Structure formats: structure tokens, C-alpha cells
Length: 319
Length: 290
Image 1 (cartoon, rainbow over the protein chains, first blue to last red):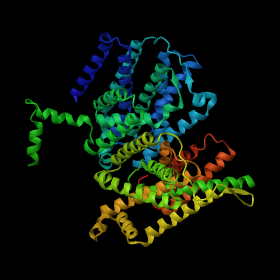
Image 2 (cartoon, each protein chain N blue to C red):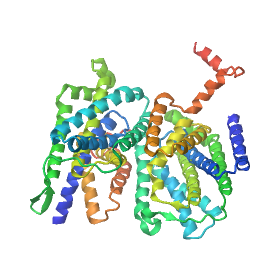
Image 3 (tube, rainbow over the protein chains, first blue to last red):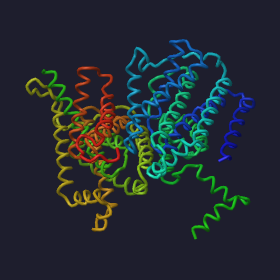
Image 4 (cartoon, chains in turn cyan, blue):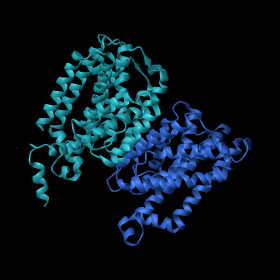
């Protein structure tokens, strides 16, 4: 869809101008978080939306990336421009390993084993004190040349731009179309010569690598990484973003990331109540809006006077 | 050797509760195919309700067990009838998302109401140790295990020898044929879900009489129950029992001889290995979908 690329480019251009108009560090911080979650949600969406398998272990790659960047910066003294790509690369390798094991499984088994990998990594991070400093985590990660909120904004914007570009290229590639075909009907896809494992693997490794980039950025931005990064609440946020926005679309996760991050920030004062509301929202979305907010867009278009006549003719076709 | 026997005993005791909770999940996940991530929250609610009835209201332990069972059965019935019923037949994914939402909701409502502190369920017998040869067991633990075993036997009898049990087995073998022969499939689903929730809750209450109940424990319990169900084989009654005992013993031995910090890793490593090498589980003969 050419309109997708137009929307994405408009959004990125608007985001690039954003820090010129806004100087408030708090607002910039929120914008940075939104872009960080755009990267995470888009990378998860590759697996959930396009492969059609439900990964609950995506925090594994976020965490691998974050720990990799932190250790490379602290122990090996690498500069920031090298650690973040290295974090992505390492997470992609981890994605290749975990994907090769888990993508043989389907449905609930895939869900539970991906979750198991994230849990194992969390426990390792908690107990391998010599490297990860255990529950205390790694503090004081150097920020390098990123001395200013605005520079951080442009760094995460660059990561987001790379993410959206790669997602766009994947979705419009043969492998992406193959993955969608497999998602819709495995046997039909196989019968026309698509290798289901191959396209799923590509999406999984790409998703893992992008989550690793986000993790690397996170380590430098927050300057602290602990085992908490593997915990389920990160995972829950990511899923809710993809789900609320609309899985299997490029724009959906962006909408979801923006809404959920702002909502989380707005409700920050009421800890448990916030998560209670979250739970309710998830249940309501599953029951009443299973395809996310993006599924409302065609309906809105239909209300406009000069909408294309396509939906009408589709309706007539049924009659 | 004495130490080994002690670890074994401790493992079997913990394993009995894993088994009880997994028995509930094997009904919901193995038979109904609802990937219930809120299972651990049912377990947690059982513990918290048990605290409410025994310690807060000062009721008798066995009366409280019956009350917890009744409340949680009604709760499970309502959730299935009004919410999960709507997602039936749409594949696994909506169920996964829905139960994740439900588990976040239940855990945090409980945190709001009772707070994060551990809550103790008053047991049926006083504290005190029994010496059986070289092994030391507290009376409280023996009591809890005895109730747990009684519950497993009762569940088995319910599934094997009652009309409801027959209807359940028929429904999950062939829902179409079952509904054609006059079984109200929707009711059977609701009853099965309620039974699963009740078993989880009672397991939580019994274990909270040994340790304590906590609002935040649900996630780990859900995962371990999934581990046991996959270990034993989907929907297999003996599989859930043996799988639970196996996990309990493995954790206890690992914790005793190797390292206490990594005990929780055992289950996940086991499940990864079992799905790679024997995806149908230890006790199921047919390999489906794995």
C-alpha cells in the first residue's frame, strides 16, 4: 500500500521537527518513550501480526540488547554509536537461536516456550552475579556523546526510522507476503512453494534484532539495566500496544504505542489502579474490538462524503 | 542418604500441590483448549480467600475449604458463561489475550484490596514436627497433603463415575456428537472451567496454610502449571499428577544439592527439552499440534 509509506514518512518528518518546537524536558522524555515503544511494538508486531504466532518472550531480546550494550560500554569501553548496533546484532543472533527452537512449535506451545526463554534469561541475569551484578543490576552506564535530551530524541528517532523502514521492506517483500500467506493458510502456502519456516525465521530474527536495538538505546538512556527488564510487565505493555493499535498493520503498533505510553504516564500516580484498568482494557479490546483501533479507519472513511465507492460495491456483491 | 530422603519428601510434598493445581489446568488447557494465563491468579485467590475465612473471620479450616471451593466454582462458572463463552471457537489467541488481561486485573484488584503483604491461612492442626525414621515432616504439611490427595481422588471420581463427568468426557471427545445426543455443551464447558478454577484455588489455599498467600504469586504459578501440564501430556490426569510430583522432586533436589537461586529454572528447562524431544508429553500417546 503506497498510502502506508506516505503516512509513515509524514509521521517521521513531523517527529523530526518536534524538538524544534518543544523545549520542555518532560515532554521530550515522553516523546522519547513513545518512540522507544514504537520500536518495540513494531518489532513484536512482525511476529504476532505477520507470522501469526504469539510470542510472550520478546523481552528476552530487549534484555539481551540492553545487557549487551551496558556490558560493552562499561567493560569494553565501546562508544555509544557502536554499542547500540552491536546490541541489535547480538539480539538477532539470540533470535536466530531461540527462533530455530520455538518456531517448530505452534499455538500454545510456542507461547509457553517463548515465555520460558524470557524467564530463564531473567533468572540467569538475577543469579550470574559475576557478569550481570545480579539483582543490583548494572548502574552508571556511560551516555557518551548523548549528553542532551534532544540528542537522545534524535537517536531514538533514528532507531525508529530504521525499524519502520525494515518493517516496511519486510512486509512488502516476498518473505513478508509469504509469511502472511502462511498465517492465513499454512497448507495452501506450502502447496505453492512457500517455505513456512524460512519466512517465519526471517521475521523472528528481524523482530529480535530490532528489539535488541531498542534495548541498547534503553540501557544508555536510563543508564541502568537490571533483571527487571525481562519481567512480564514490559511484555504486557508491548502486547497491549500491538493489540490496541491493530496487529498485522504497520500503522497500528505506532498508534498503540502512543496511546498506551501516554495513558501509562497519565495514570502513573495510581499504581495498582493503573494496572487494574489495563487489565480491563485488554479484556474489553479482545471482546469488542478484536482487530484494534486501526480497524475503525475504513469505517471512518466510509462516513466521509468523497470516500471511494469500494465498500459499497463490496456490500452489493454480497447481495 | 538421610538428606536425600528429606529432599525427596519435601519435593513430593510441594509436588502434590503442583499436581493439584496442574490438574485444574489440564482440564482448562488440555481439554477445553483455553490457554488460561489467569490460572495462577485463581490459585492466588484461593490462598487469599482462605486467609479471609480462617484468619480474618476465624472460621474452621474444613468449613473454609468448602467455602473457598464454592466461591471459586461460582466465580469460574460466571467467567466462563459470560466472558470466555464469547471467545469459543475463535482459536487460541483471543483466549490467551483475554486471560492475560484477566490475570493482570485480578492480581491488581487483590493488591488494591489486601495489599502486598504475605497472608497466613490458619491450618487445621497445630504446628509441630513428626519424625518418621530419618525424615522430619510437620503435621501441618501432612494434613495439607492428605487433603490434597483426597481432592485428587474426588476429582478422579467426579470425572469417571458421575453423569457430569461422562458429559465432560463426551463433550471433549466430540462436541458435535455430544450436543446431538442432548448434552448442553455450553454448561459442560462452564462446569469444567469452574472445576479447574476450584482445583487451583484449593491448591493455593492448602499451600498457603504451609507457607503464605501473596497477591503477586500468580504469574509463576501459572507458568509452573503449564510446565506440569506439558510435561505430563495435555488433558492427561495421571500425567498431571506424575508431572507435578516430578517437578517438585526435581526442584527440591536441585535446590538441595546444586543451587537454591536457580530452582525456578528447572521447570522451564524441562519444558523446553520435553517439547523438543517428546512433544506429546510423558503420558500422552498421540502427538498433536506440538
